[in-house]
Image (cartoon, rainbow, N blue to C red; front, side, top):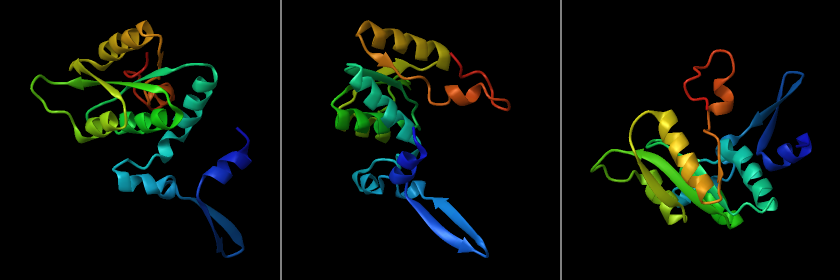
Amino acid sequence: MPINNVIENTPIEQYKVGNYKVFVKRDDLFLAHLQSQGLPPLAKLRGARILLQRLKNENVHKVGVFDTRISKAGQGIAYFCKELELECMAGFPQLKGQPLSESHLIAQRLGATLFPLKAGRTAPMYHSFKKLVEEQKGYMLKKMMESFSKRKGFCNYQTS
């Protein structure tokens, strides 16, 4: 992606500090109007939005996202899926008798179909949900930290 597109889509403030220009990227302002709707700041999901648009352009109609109880990735992906008219499948660990988390309820209100999974180890849950998504002709998003986990200094337990 050309840097101009990133700059145009990212709230950036410029300051003069001595003889230097300092640019401050304001992730807290990116899609800030959505926070009034109960959505998380979606700046960290910009790459996902770009990917979802690409998938739509490639005629993908259904997307799966593996979420957690405390993550807000599911509701962010649900929002972008709604915006792009894609079907969102959100899988997440759920203990028996445990109520849905607020973030999952928001994802559901945004149109995501929720798939509570028996809580357990992350890798087997992710792969069983990925299989379900693919059986329904959907595209399974990689775990959000997967690309980072292979870098030096991160644990590899989240990799596929």
